[in-house]
Amino acid sequence: MIFQPLSQNIPGMGQVIDPQAFQSGQVDQQNEQACAYAVESGKGCQHSNQESPNTQSVGQVTVGQNKTAHTGDANRNNNLKLACEAINGVILEPGETFDYNTVVGKRTEEKGYKPAGTYSGTKLIDTVGGGICQVSSTLYYACLKGNLKIVERWAHRFAPSYIPLGMDATVSWGGPDFRFKNNTNYPIRIEATADGGTVNVSLVGTDEKDYYVELQYEVLATYGYDTTFQTMVAGNSDGYRDGDFIIQPHTGYSVKTYRCKYNKETKELISKDDEDASYYNKCDAVV
Image (cartoon, rainbow, N blue to C red; front, side, top):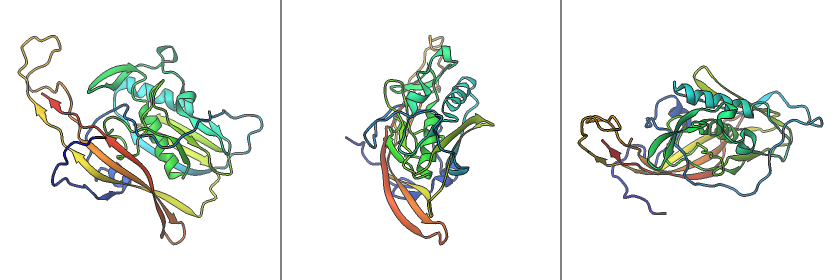
């Protein structure tokens, strides 16, 4: 992979960032949506199953959870709600693997999905089911907090704004998928909602761990974007005026994420393990 030349004096470069600081607004990110760049972690495939008559009783402890803020776009929020309803209540037995695309299914208008923003190359266009990557990303983060095994995960082409760097999980029907395995000894139930301005995902089960998990990310490199200016002709077919963004800019990043385990009683760090590496493209602005 060829990286762009490294910018100098980049704030935060090489620092290990606490994702909670990101979500509380202490770490600034660009406001951007995204879809589809490949950073795969893991191999193998096994489809998830809905609850069966033989399912064990599910515990009532939250073993992993996360919430992310969503926009006021009505179509996008409709898609978030439908994707949450599709995964809500799914129970994974020990050893089973959850497959996001299989459980949610193809996103169609017949199912109620609406056109919303996704990226095609460098341009944001409306596609049916746009935005549901936020649900898979929120679920991915909850899985990391629950110390579950990630089977497949892909980063977005451009860094999304609703979740810390390196902790997103893009999906596309017939393309990138998100899969994780219940590597615990007990069933796990997914609880997911999209309301009150947030996507909420909790993994409910039985917690046997004597440790808890915190996540960190490290920005290894940042790739700044350039800006090209165009003079717009009055009355152009796209309705652009001078000063309008024709192509929205995106800063590129090379990021490494870590899964850190802490003793529940002493709060001491037990281990800090590499989780994944993510590369987000830069996109030059056209104004």
